[in-house]
Length: 369
Length: 218
Image (cartoon, rainbow over all chains, first blue to last red; front, side, top):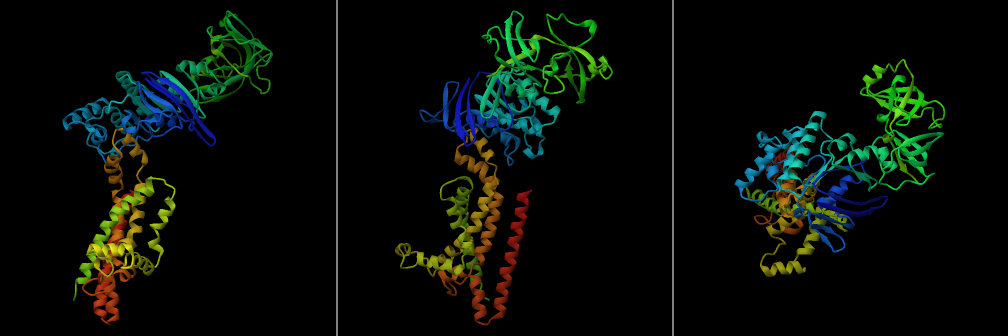
Protein backbone atom coordinates (compact mmCIF):
# COMPACT_ATOMS: atom_id res chain seq x y z
CA UNK A 1 0.00 0.00 0.00
CA UNK A 2 1.33 3.37 -1.06
CA UNK A 3 0.09 6.65 0.31
CA UNK A 4 1.16 9.70 -1.55
CA UNK A 5 0.57 13.33 -0.72
CA UNK A 6 2.92 15.77 -2.39
CA UNK A 7 3.02 19.43 -3.29
CA UNK A 8 5.63 21.52 -5.04
CA UNK A 9 5.54 24.96 -6.65
CA UNK A 10 7.39 26.22 -9.65
CA UNK A 11 6.79 29.52 -11.39
CA UNK A 12 3.79 28.74 -13.57
CA UNK A 13 3.35 25.13 -12.46
CA UNK A 14 2.03 23.57 -9.34
CA UNK A 15 2.19 19.90 -8.49
CA UNK A 16 -0.32 18.90 -5.88
CA UNK A 17 -1.80 15.48 -5.47
CA UNK A 18 -3.04 12.98 -2.98
CA UNK A 19 -3.38 9.33 -3.94
CA UNK A 20 -3.66 6.02 -2.10
CA UNK A 21 -2.75 2.88 -3.98
CA UNK A 22 -3.27 -0.73 -2.97
CA UNK A 23 -1.88 -3.84 -4.63
CA UNK A 24 -3.24 -2.76 -7.97
CA UNK A 25 -2.15 -1.34 -11.27
CA UNK A 26 -2.81 2.39 -11.35
CA UNK A 27 -2.37 4.24 -14.60
CA UNK A 28 -1.33 7.87 -14.32
CA UNK A 29 -2.97 9.31 -17.39
CA UNK A 30 -2.60 12.77 -18.85
CA UNK A 31 -0.87 14.94 -21.40
CA UNK A 32 2.89 15.41 -21.33
CA UNK A 33 3.77 18.02 -18.76
CA UNK A 34 0.88 17.03 -16.49
CA UNK A 35 3.23 15.91 -13.71
CA UNK A 36 3.06 12.13 -14.23
CA UNK A 37 6.81 11.50 -14.40
CA UNK A 38 7.45 13.89 -11.53
CA UNK A 39 5.08 11.88 -9.37
CA UNK A 40 7.00 8.68 -10.11
CA UNK A 41 10.30 10.41 -9.41
CA UNK A 42 8.97 11.66 -6.09
CA UNK A 43 8.10 8.09 -5.06
CA UNK A 44 11.54 6.88 -6.18
CA UNK A 45 13.23 9.62 -4.17
CA UNK A 46 14.76 11.25 -7.22
CA UNK A 47 12.70 14.40 -6.85
CA UNK A 48 12.06 16.03 -3.50
CA UNK A 49 8.74 17.83 -3.28
CA UNK A 50 8.68 20.92 -1.09
CA UNK A 51 6.04 19.40 1.14
CA UNK A 52 4.29 16.11 1.52
CA UNK A 53 4.30 12.57 2.80
CA UNK A 54 4.97 9.26 1.11
CA UNK A 55 4.25 6.08 3.03
CA UNK A 56 4.95 2.67 1.53
CA UNK A 57 3.68 -0.39 3.44
CA UNK A 58 3.79 1.60 6.67
CA UNK A 59 7.35 2.79 6.05
CA UNK A 60 7.61 6.57 5.93
CA UNK A 61 9.73 7.41 2.87
CA UNK A 62 9.12 11.13 3.00
CA UNK A 63 7.64 13.41 5.57
CA UNK A 64 8.67 17.00 5.07
CA UNK A 65 7.11 18.07 8.36
CA UNK A 66 9.30 15.79 10.46
CA UNK A 67 12.24 16.03 8.07
CA UNK A 68 12.24 12.38 7.01
CA UNK A 69 13.58 11.78 3.52
CA UNK A 70 14.69 8.22 2.83
CA UNK A 71 17.31 8.17 0.04
CA UNK A 72 16.48 6.24 -3.15
CA UNK A 73 18.90 3.50 -2.10
CA UNK A 74 16.75 2.51 0.87
CA UNK A 75 13.27 2.98 -0.60
CA UNK A 76 12.85 -0.45 -2.23
CA UNK A 77 11.17 0.90 -5.33
CA UNK A 78 11.49 -0.62 -8.78
CA UNK A 79 11.91 2.29 -11.17
CA UNK A 80 11.90 1.99 -14.94
CA UNK A 81 12.36 5.42 -16.54
CA UNK A 82 11.31 6.31 -20.04
CA UNK A 83 13.97 4.93 -22.38
CA UNK A 84 14.76 2.13 -19.86
CA UNK A 85 18.20 3.48 -18.80
CA UNK A 86 19.94 0.14 -19.16
CA UNK A 87 23.63 0.28 -18.27
CA UNK A 88 25.23 0.17 -21.74
CA UNK A 89 28.58 -1.18 -20.55
CA UNK A 90 27.08 -4.15 -18.73
CA UNK A 91 25.58 -7.36 -20.08
CA UNK A 92 21.93 -8.27 -19.67
CA UNK A 93 22.91 -10.52 -16.76
CA UNK A 94 24.99 -7.80 -15.09
CA UNK A 95 22.20 -5.28 -15.53
CA UNK A 96 19.70 -7.50 -13.76
CA UNK A 97 22.25 -8.47 -11.09
CA UNK A 98 23.20 -4.84 -10.42
CA UNK A 99 20.85 -4.32 -7.49
CA UNK A 100 21.44 -7.70 -5.86
CA UNK A 101 23.77 -8.20 -2.98
CA UNK A 102 24.16 -11.72 -1.76
CA UNK A 103 26.41 -14.66 -2.51
CA UNK A 104 27.26 -15.00 -6.16
CA UNK A 105 25.50 -18.37 -6.38
CA UNK A 106 22.28 -16.92 -5.11
CA UNK A 107 22.61 -13.89 -7.38
CA UNK A 108 23.08 -16.15 -10.36
CA UNK A 109 19.99 -18.12 -9.42
CA UNK A 110 17.85 -15.02 -8.94
CA UNK A 111 19.01 -13.28 -12.11
CA UNK A 112 18.37 -16.36 -14.23
CA UNK A 113 14.97 -16.81 -12.62
CA UNK A 114 14.04 -13.23 -13.51
CA UNK A 115 15.42 -13.47 -17.02
CA UNK A 116 13.35 -16.59 -17.42
CA UNK A 117 10.22 -14.84 -16.17
CA UNK A 118 10.59 -12.07 -18.73
CA UNK A 119 11.55 -14.55 -21.45
CA UNK A 120 15.20 -13.57 -21.95
CA UNK A 121 17.10 -16.48 -20.38
CA UNK A 122 19.06 -17.14 -23.58
CA UNK A 123 20.19 -13.51 -24.00
CA UNK A 124 21.95 -13.14 -20.64
CA UNK A 125 25.33 -12.45 -22.24
CA UNK A 126 24.20 -9.74 -24.66
CA UNK A 127 24.80 -6.02 -24.32
CA UNK A 128 21.78 -3.65 -24.31
CA UNK A 129 22.58 -2.25 -27.76
CA UNK A 130 22.29 -5.76 -29.20
CA UNK A 131 18.66 -6.03 -28.08
CA UNK A 132 15.38 -4.89 -29.63
CA UNK A 133 13.29 -2.25 -27.87
CA UNK A 134 10.95 -4.85 -26.42
CA UNK A 135 13.83 -6.95 -25.13
CA UNK A 136 15.41 -3.88 -23.55
CA UNK A 137 12.16 -3.15 -21.75
CA UNK A 138 12.06 -6.75 -20.47
CA UNK A 139 15.58 -6.36 -19.08
CA UNK A 140 14.60 -3.10 -17.40
CA UNK A 141 11.58 -4.83 -15.83
CA UNK A 142 13.68 -7.77 -14.61
CA UNK A 143 16.31 -5.42 -13.19
CA UNK A 144 13.70 -3.36 -11.33
CA UNK A 145 11.86 -6.41 -9.99
CA UNK A 146 14.92 -8.48 -9.02
CA UNK A 147 15.44 -6.34 -5.94
CA UNK A 148 11.95 -7.39 -4.72
CA UNK A 149 10.61 -3.84 -4.59
CA UNK A 150 7.53 -2.81 -2.63
CA UNK A 151 6.24 -0.78 -5.56
CA UNK A 152 6.92 -0.75 -9.31
CA UNK A 153 7.13 2.56 -11.18
CA UNK A 154 6.89 2.46 -14.98
CA UNK A 155 7.31 5.69 -16.94
CA UNK A 156 5.79 5.42 -20.42
CA UNK A 157 7.25 1.94 -20.64
CA UNK A 158 5.76 0.98 -23.99
CA UNK A 159 5.51 4.23 -25.92
CA UNK A 160 8.55 3.54 -28.12
CA UNK A 161 7.48 0.02 -29.13
CA UNK A 162 5.66 -1.31 -32.19
CA UNK A 163 2.09 -2.54 -31.74
CA UNK A 164 2.66 -6.33 -31.48
CA UNK A 165 5.57 -5.95 -29.02
CA UNK A 166 3.54 -3.47 -27.08
CA UNK A 167 0.64 -5.86 -26.55
CA UNK A 168 3.02 -8.67 -25.52
CA UNK A 169 4.54 -6.44 -22.88
CA UNK A 170 1.16 -5.18 -21.75
CA UNK A 171 0.22 -8.79 -21.04
CA UNK A 172 3.55 -9.41 -19.28
CA UNK A 173 3.20 -6.36 -17.04
CA UNK A 174 -0.39 -7.30 -16.18
CA UNK A 175 0.69 -10.85 -15.32
CA UNK A 176 3.64 -9.73 -13.22
CA UNK A 177 1.47 -7.32 -11.25
CA UNK A 178 -1.02 -10.09 -10.40
CA UNK A 179 1.75 -12.53 -9.42
CA UNK A 180 3.74 -10.08 -7.29
CA UNK A 181 0.66 -8.37 -5.87
CA UNK A 182 2.40 -5.02 -5.37
CA UNK A 183 1.26 -1.52 -6.33
CA UNK A 184 2.26 -0.61 -9.88
CA UNK A 185 2.23 2.98 -11.10
CA UNK A 186 2.12 3.04 -14.87
CA UNK A 187 2.46 6.33 -16.71
CA UNK A 188 0.97 6.70 -20.16
CA UNK A 189 -0.68 9.33 -22.32
CA UNK A 190 -2.44 6.70 -24.44
CA UNK A 191 -6.05 6.22 -23.54
CA UNK A 192 -6.47 2.72 -25.01
CA UNK A 193 -3.45 1.45 -23.06
CA UNK A 194 -4.69 3.08 -19.86
CA UNK A 195 -8.13 1.49 -20.17
CA UNK A 196 -6.75 -1.92 -21.08
CA UNK A 197 -4.25 -2.18 -18.23
CA UNK A 198 -5.60 -0.19 -15.36
CA UNK A 199 -7.38 -1.36 -12.27
CA UNK A 200 -7.89 2.33 -11.70
CA UNK A 201 -6.99 5.37 -13.76
CA UNK A 202 -5.74 8.57 -12.16
CA UNK A 203 -6.21 11.49 -14.54
CA UNK A 204 -3.65 14.27 -14.17
CA UNK A 205 -3.66 17.72 -15.68
CA UNK A 206 -1.53 20.71 -14.80
CA UNK A 207 -0.05 18.97 -11.76
CA UNK A 208 -3.42 18.04 -10.23
CA UNK A 209 -5.53 14.92 -10.02
CA UNK A 210 -8.79 15.48 -11.85
CA UNK A 211 -10.33 12.07 -11.29
CA UNK A 212 -9.39 8.67 -9.93
CA UNK A 213 -11.64 5.80 -10.86
CA UNK A 214 -12.34 2.58 -12.70
CA UNK A 215 -11.53 2.75 -16.42
CA UNK A 216 -15.20 2.51 -17.37
CA UNK A 217 -16.09 5.37 -15.04
CA UNK A 218 -13.34 7.61 -16.34
CA UNK A 219 -14.40 6.79 -19.90
CA UNK A 220 -18.14 7.14 -19.46
CA UNK A 221 -18.58 9.22 -16.33
CA UNK A 222 -15.86 11.89 -16.46
CA UNK A 223 -15.98 13.98 -13.31
CA UNK A 224 -14.87 17.21 -14.95
CA UNK A 225 -14.95 18.81 -18.38
CA UNK A 226 -11.15 18.50 -18.70
CA UNK A 227 -11.41 14.75 -18.13
CA UNK A 228 -14.14 14.50 -20.76
CA UNK A 229 -11.78 16.16 -23.24
CA UNK A 230 -8.86 13.93 -22.26
CA UNK A 231 -10.84 10.70 -22.63
CA UNK A 232 -12.10 11.74 -26.03
CA UNK A 233 -15.76 12.57 -25.40
CA UNK A 234 -16.67 14.35 -28.63
CA UNK A 235 -20.21 15.45 -27.82
CA UNK A 236 -20.12 18.02 -25.03
CA UNK A 237 -23.37 19.94 -24.81
CA UNK A 238 -24.49 22.71 -22.48
CA UNK A 239 -27.74 21.93 -20.67
CA UNK A 240 -29.84 22.59 -17.60
CA UNK A 241 -31.40 20.26 -15.06
CA UNK A 242 -35.19 20.11 -15.37
CA UNK A 243 -35.80 17.56 -12.70
CA UNK A 244 -35.13 14.04 -11.57
CA UNK A 245 -37.41 11.07 -12.00
CA UNK A 246 -37.10 7.31 -11.46
CA UNK A 247 -35.86 6.95 -15.04
CA UNK A 248 -33.01 9.35 -14.38
CA UNK A 249 -32.19 12.97 -14.82
CA UNK A 250 -34.22 15.14 -17.16
CA UNK A 251 -31.98 17.65 -18.89
CA UNK A 252 -32.94 20.56 -21.11
CA UNK A 253 -30.56 20.99 -24.03
CA UNK A 254 -31.47 23.78 -26.41
CA UNK A 255 -35.22 23.31 -26.70
CA UNK A 256 -35.21 19.57 -26.10
CA UNK A 257 -35.52 17.33 -23.11
CA UNK A 258 -32.96 14.52 -22.91
CA UNK A 259 -32.94 11.81 -20.28
CA UNK A 260 -29.56 11.28 -18.65
CA UNK A 261 -27.95 8.94 -16.14
CA UNK A 262 -27.63 10.04 -12.56
CA UNK A 263 -25.93 8.01 -9.87
CA UNK A 264 -28.76 7.33 -7.35
CA UNK A 265 -26.21 7.53 -4.52
CA UNK A 266 -25.21 11.07 -5.44
CA UNK A 267 -27.30 14.03 -4.26
CA UNK A 268 -29.54 15.15 -7.14
CA UNK A 269 -28.63 18.50 -8.65
CA UNK A 270 -31.15 21.31 -8.14
CA UNK A 271 -33.49 22.15 -11.01
CA UNK A 272 -32.03 24.84 -13.23
CA UNK A 273 -28.42 23.88 -12.45
CA UNK A 274 -26.03 24.08 -15.41
CA UNK A 275 -24.67 20.80 -16.73
CA UNK A 276 -22.11 19.84 -19.29
CA UNK A 277 -23.68 16.84 -21.01
CA UNK A 278 -21.31 14.17 -22.33
CA UNK A 279 -22.41 11.72 -25.00
CA UNK A 280 -19.71 9.46 -26.43
CA UNK A 281 -19.82 9.35 -30.23
CA UNK A 282 -19.55 5.53 -30.04
CA UNK A 283 -22.70 5.33 -27.92
CA UNK A 284 -25.19 6.73 -30.43
CA UNK A 285 -27.13 4.22 -32.53
CA UNK A 286 -28.74 4.72 -35.91
CA UNK A 287 -31.93 2.69 -35.96
CA UNK A 288 -34.16 1.45 -38.78
CA UNK A 289 -37.70 2.88 -38.72
CA UNK A 290 -39.14 -0.63 -38.12
CA UNK A 291 -36.92 -1.27 -35.08
CA UNK A 292 -37.39 1.88 -33.06
CA UNK A 293 -37.11 1.29 -29.31
CA UNK A 294 -39.95 2.64 -27.16
CA UNK A 295 -39.41 6.37 -26.65
CA UNK A 296 -39.78 6.05 -22.87
CA UNK A 297 -36.69 3.81 -22.80
CA UNK A 298 -34.31 5.74 -25.03
CA UNK A 299 -33.76 9.26 -26.28
CA UNK A 300 -34.92 9.31 -29.90
CA UNK A 301 -34.19 12.10 -32.36
CA UNK A 302 -34.83 12.43 -36.07
CA UNK A 303 -32.39 14.13 -38.33
CA UNK A 304 -29.87 13.68 -41.12
CA UNK A 305 -26.23 13.04 -41.77
CA UNK A 306 -24.72 16.21 -43.18
CA UNK A 307 -21.05 15.27 -43.42
CA UNK A 308 -18.75 12.40 -42.59
CA UNK A 309 -15.07 11.56 -42.16
CA UNK A 310 -13.54 8.20 -43.02
CA UNK A 311 -10.87 7.24 -40.45
CA UNK A 312 -10.36 3.82 -42.03
CA UNK A 313 -11.22 1.84 -38.90
CA UNK A 314 -14.25 3.95 -38.15
CA UNK A 315 -16.61 6.45 -39.75
CA UNK A 316 -17.46 9.68 -38.01
CA UNK A 317 -20.82 11.12 -39.03
CA UNK A 318 -21.90 14.68 -38.33
CA UNK A 319 -25.62 14.57 -37.56
CA UNK A 320 -28.14 17.41 -37.52
CA UNK A 321 -31.41 16.86 -35.72
CA UNK A 322 -34.73 18.08 -37.10
CA UNK A 323 -36.79 20.46 -35.04
CA UNK A 324 -35.25 22.08 -31.96
CA UNK A 325 -31.48 22.00 -32.28
CA UNK A 326 -29.05 20.92 -29.54
CA UNK A 327 -26.24 23.20 -30.68
CA UNK A 328 -27.69 25.94 -32.87
CA UNK A 329 -24.31 27.72 -33.01
CA UNK A 330 -22.95 25.20 -35.54
CA UNK A 331 -24.42 23.33 -38.48
CA UNK A 332 -24.51 19.87 -36.81
CA UNK A 333 -25.58 18.66 -33.37
CA UNK A 334 -23.86 15.35 -32.70
CA UNK A 335 -20.85 13.34 -33.80
CA UNK A 336 -21.55 9.65 -34.27
CA UNK A 337 -18.82 7.06 -34.63
CA UNK A 338 -19.55 3.70 -36.19
CA UNK A 339 -17.47 0.82 -37.62
CA UNK A 340 -17.15 0.69 -41.42
CA UNK A 341 -19.17 -2.51 -41.74
CA UNK A 342 -22.16 -0.86 -40.05
CA UNK A 343 -21.78 2.05 -42.44
CA UNK A 344 -21.89 -0.34 -45.38
CA UNK A 345 -24.67 -2.59 -44.02
CA UNK A 346 -26.94 0.36 -43.36
CA UNK A 347 -26.16 1.93 -46.72
CA UNK A 348 -25.36 5.26 -45.12
CA UNK A 349 -23.83 6.65 -48.29
CA UNK A 350 -27.32 6.62 -49.83
CA UNK A 351 -29.72 6.90 -46.90
CA UNK A 352 -29.05 10.12 -44.99
CA UNK A 353 -32.23 10.58 -42.95
CA UNK A 354 -32.23 8.57 -39.74
CA UNK A 355 -33.57 8.29 -36.28
CA UNK A 356 -30.89 8.07 -33.64
CA UNK A 357 -31.28 6.39 -30.27
CA UNK A 358 -29.26 7.23 -27.18
CA UNK A 359 -29.77 5.27 -23.98
CA UNK A 360 -30.04 7.42 -20.86
CA UNK A 361 -27.10 5.49 -19.33
CA UNK A 362 -24.97 6.85 -22.16
CA UNK A 363 -25.79 10.45 -21.34
CA UNK A 364 -23.67 11.79 -18.52
CA UNK A 365 -23.98 15.20 -16.95
CA UNK A 366 -21.12 17.08 -15.29
CA UNK A 367 -22.33 19.78 -12.93
CA UNK A 368 -20.63 23.06 -13.75
CA UNK A 369 -20.73 26.34 -11.92
CA UNK B 1 73.87 12.84 -27.84
CA UNK B 2 72.66 13.55 -24.31
CA UNK B 3 69.38 11.76 -23.66
CA UNK B 4 68.81 13.31 -20.25
CA UNK B 5 66.25 15.93 -21.46
CA UNK B 6 64.17 13.20 -23.11
CA UNK B 7 64.12 11.04 -19.98
CA UNK B 8 63.41 14.02 -17.73
CA UNK B 9 60.58 15.19 -19.96
CA UNK B 10 59.03 11.71 -19.97
CA UNK B 11 59.25 11.56 -16.19
CA UNK B 12 57.89 15.08 -15.70
CA UNK B 13 55.01 14.60 -18.13
CA UNK B 14 54.08 11.22 -16.64
CA UNK B 15 53.99 12.53 -13.10
CA UNK B 16 52.15 15.69 -14.15
CA UNK B 17 49.54 13.57 -15.94
CA UNK B 18 49.13 11.33 -12.90
CA UNK B 19 48.50 14.37 -10.68
CA UNK B 20 46.13 15.82 -13.27
CA UNK B 21 44.24 12.56 -13.55
CA UNK B 22 43.21 12.78 -9.91
CA UNK B 23 42.58 16.53 -9.98
CA UNK B 24 40.82 16.35 -13.34
CA UNK B 25 38.43 13.60 -12.26
CA UNK B 26 37.61 15.35 -8.99
CA UNK B 27 37.16 18.87 -10.39
CA UNK B 28 35.64 17.69 -13.67
CA UNK B 29 33.05 15.64 -11.80
CA UNK B 30 32.23 18.56 -9.50
CA UNK B 31 31.77 20.90 -12.45
CA UNK B 32 29.66 18.38 -14.37
CA UNK B 33 27.47 17.01 -11.61
CA UNK B 34 27.20 19.50 -8.78
CA UNK B 35 25.83 22.99 -8.88
CA UNK B 36 27.30 25.34 -6.31
CA UNK B 37 27.41 29.14 -6.09
CA UNK B 38 30.94 29.68 -7.40
CA UNK B 39 30.87 27.00 -10.07
CA UNK B 40 31.42 29.43 -12.94
CA UNK B 41 34.28 31.06 -11.07
CA UNK B 42 35.92 27.68 -10.46
CA UNK B 43 35.34 26.79 -14.10
CA UNK B 44 37.09 30.01 -15.14
CA UNK B 45 39.97 29.60 -12.70
CA UNK B 46 40.83 26.09 -13.87
CA UNK B 47 40.73 27.26 -17.51
CA UNK B 48 42.91 30.35 -17.02
CA UNK B 49 46.27 28.54 -17.51
CA UNK B 50 45.11 27.90 -21.07
CA UNK B 51 44.87 31.59 -21.95
CA UNK B 52 47.59 33.15 -19.81
CA UNK B 53 51.08 33.43 -21.32
CA UNK B 54 53.08 30.52 -19.84
CA UNK B 55 55.61 32.99 -18.41
CA UNK B 56 52.85 34.71 -16.46
CA UNK B 57 51.70 31.36 -15.15
CA UNK B 58 55.29 30.51 -14.27
CA UNK B 59 55.70 33.82 -12.51
CA UNK B 60 52.62 33.12 -10.33
CA UNK B 61 53.99 29.70 -9.44
CA UNK B 62 57.41 31.15 -8.69
CA UNK B 63 55.92 33.71 -6.34
CA UNK B 64 53.57 31.18 -4.75
CA UNK B 65 56.14 28.42 -4.27
CA UNK B 66 59.41 30.35 -3.99
CA UNK B 67 61.62 30.71 -0.93
CA UNK B 68 59.90 33.86 0.28
CA UNK B 69 56.39 32.38 0.27
CA UNK B 70 54.93 30.42 3.20
CA UNK B 71 54.41 27.39 0.98
CA UNK B 72 57.97 27.58 -0.28
CA UNK B 73 59.35 27.87 3.25
CA UNK B 74 57.27 24.91 4.40
CA UNK B 75 58.52 22.80 1.49
CA UNK B 76 62.07 23.88 2.21
CA UNK B 77 61.68 22.82 5.84
CA UNK B 78 60.40 19.43 4.68
CA UNK B 79 63.44 19.08 2.46
CA UNK B 80 61.52 19.04 -0.84
CA UNK B 81 61.98 22.47 -2.37
CA UNK B 82 60.18 22.89 -5.68
CA UNK B 83 61.70 25.95 -7.26
CA UNK B 84 64.66 25.24 -9.57
CA UNK B 85 64.26 21.45 -9.14
CA UNK B 86 62.75 18.82 -11.42
CA UNK B 87 59.78 18.71 -9.02
CA UNK B 88 59.13 22.34 -9.92
CA UNK B 89 59.05 21.27 -13.56
CA UNK B 90 56.37 18.70 -12.66
CA UNK B 91 54.26 21.37 -10.95
CA UNK B 92 54.66 23.77 -13.88
CA UNK B 93 53.77 21.08 -16.43
CA UNK B 94 50.82 19.90 -14.35
CA UNK B 95 49.33 23.36 -13.89
CA UNK B 96 49.71 24.32 -17.53
CA UNK B 97 48.08 21.10 -18.76
CA UNK B 98 45.41 20.85 -16.06
CA UNK B 99 42.75 22.80 -18.02
CA UNK B 100 42.83 20.24 -20.84
CA UNK B 101 42.39 17.41 -18.36
CA UNK B 102 39.58 19.08 -16.43
CA UNK B 103 37.72 20.05 -19.59
CA UNK B 104 37.95 16.53 -20.97
CA UNK B 105 36.81 15.01 -17.69
CA UNK B 106 33.96 17.47 -17.36
CA UNK B 107 32.74 16.73 -20.89
CA UNK B 108 33.12 13.00 -20.27
CA UNK B 109 31.05 13.14 -17.08
CA UNK B 110 28.46 15.39 -18.69
CA UNK B 111 28.13 12.77 -21.42
CA UNK B 112 26.96 10.15 -18.92
CA UNK B 113 23.16 10.14 -18.72
CA UNK B 114 22.26 11.13 -15.14
CA UNK B 115 19.27 8.80 -15.38
CA UNK B 116 21.63 5.81 -15.35
CA UNK B 117 23.04 7.01 -12.04
CA UNK B 118 19.55 7.63 -10.69
CA UNK B 119 18.38 4.14 -11.57
CA UNK B 120 21.54 2.72 -9.99
CA UNK B 121 20.63 4.54 -6.77
CA UNK B 122 17.11 3.12 -6.76
CA UNK B 123 18.75 -0.31 -7.08
CA UNK B 124 20.34 0.26 -3.69
CA UNK B 125 23.89 1.25 -4.65
CA UNK B 126 25.66 3.98 -2.67
CA UNK B 127 26.91 7.18 -4.31
CA UNK B 128 30.45 5.87 -4.22
CA UNK B 129 29.49 2.54 -5.80
CA UNK B 130 27.45 4.31 -8.47
CA UNK B 131 30.49 6.45 -9.31
CA UNK B 132 32.82 3.47 -9.61
CA UNK B 133 30.47 1.09 -11.41
CA UNK B 134 28.50 3.44 -13.68
CA UNK B 135 29.87 6.97 -13.98
CA UNK B 136 33.58 6.27 -14.23
CA UNK B 137 33.41 3.28 -16.62
CA UNK B 138 31.12 5.24 -18.96
CA UNK B 139 33.27 8.38 -18.80
CA UNK B 140 36.51 6.47 -19.10
CA UNK B 141 37.23 6.99 -22.80
CA UNK B 142 36.81 10.75 -22.48
CA UNK B 143 39.09 10.79 -19.45
CA UNK B 144 41.68 8.77 -21.35
CA UNK B 145 41.54 11.23 -24.25
CA UNK B 146 42.06 14.02 -21.71
CA UNK B 147 45.07 12.21 -20.32
CA UNK B 148 46.66 11.98 -23.74
CA UNK B 149 46.11 15.66 -24.47
CA UNK B 150 47.29 16.61 -21.03
CA UNK B 151 50.40 14.44 -21.38
CA UNK B 152 51.24 16.02 -24.73
CA UNK B 153 50.79 19.51 -23.33
CA UNK B 154 52.90 18.71 -20.25
CA UNK B 155 55.65 17.26 -22.43
CA UNK B 156 55.81 20.41 -24.49
CA UNK B 157 55.67 23.01 -21.76
CA UNK B 158 58.41 25.62 -22.05
CA UNK B 159 57.58 28.97 -20.47
CA UNK B 160 56.18 27.95 -17.11
CA UNK B 161 58.81 25.26 -16.65
CA UNK B 162 61.61 27.69 -17.45
CA UNK B 163 60.30 30.19 -14.89
CA UNK B 164 59.80 27.66 -12.08
CA UNK B 165 62.50 25.07 -12.68
CA UNK B 166 65.05 27.07 -14.63
CA UNK B 167 67.40 25.69 -17.22
CA UNK B 168 69.95 23.58 -15.38
CA UNK B 169 71.48 21.03 -17.78
CA UNK B 170 71.38 17.56 -16.31
CA UNK B 171 68.94 18.61 -13.60
CA UNK B 172 65.97 20.62 -14.87
CA UNK B 173 66.57 20.88 -18.59
CA UNK B 174 63.51 19.32 -20.26
CA UNK B 175 63.18 18.53 -23.95
CA UNK B 176 61.48 21.79 -24.86
CA UNK B 177 64.07 23.81 -22.99
CA UNK B 178 66.88 21.77 -24.51
CA UNK B 179 65.63 22.82 -27.97
CA UNK B 180 65.96 26.46 -26.98
CA UNK B 181 69.35 25.74 -25.46
CA UNK B 182 70.58 23.97 -28.61
CA UNK B 183 69.51 26.87 -30.80
CA UNK B 184 71.20 29.34 -28.48
CA UNK B 185 74.35 27.21 -28.55
CA UNK B 186 74.21 27.18 -32.35
CA UNK B 187 73.84 23.37 -32.53
CA UNK B 188 71.27 22.87 -35.35
CA UNK B 189 71.72 19.08 -35.49
CA UNK B 190 70.82 18.62 -31.84
CA UNK B 191 67.98 21.15 -32.13
CA UNK B 192 66.67 19.31 -35.22
CA UNK B 193 66.65 15.90 -33.53
CA UNK B 194 64.90 17.25 -30.45
CA UNK B 195 62.32 19.12 -32.53
CA UNK B 196 61.63 16.02 -34.62
CA UNK B 197 61.16 13.93 -31.48
CA UNK B 198 58.71 16.40 -29.98
CA UNK B 199 56.80 16.81 -33.24
CA UNK B 200 56.42 13.09 -33.94
CA UNK B 201 55.25 12.49 -30.43
CA UNK B 202 52.81 15.40 -30.58
CA UNK B 203 51.26 14.14 -33.83
CA UNK B 204 50.97 10.59 -32.50
CA UNK B 205 49.19 11.66 -29.33
CA UNK B 206 46.75 13.87 -31.23
CA UNK B 207 45.93 11.07 -33.67
CA UNK B 208 45.31 8.76 -30.72
CA UNK B 209 43.13 11.36 -29.02
CA UNK B 210 41.06 11.83 -32.19
CA UNK B 211 40.52 8.11 -32.57
CA UNK B 212 39.42 7.85 -28.98
CA UNK B 213 37.12 10.81 -29.45
CA UNK B 214 35.53 9.23 -32.51
CA UNK B 215 34.94 5.94 -30.75
CA UNK B 216 33.48 7.93 -27.89
CA UNK B 217 31.03 9.60 -30.21
CA UNK B 218 30.00 6.33 -31.86
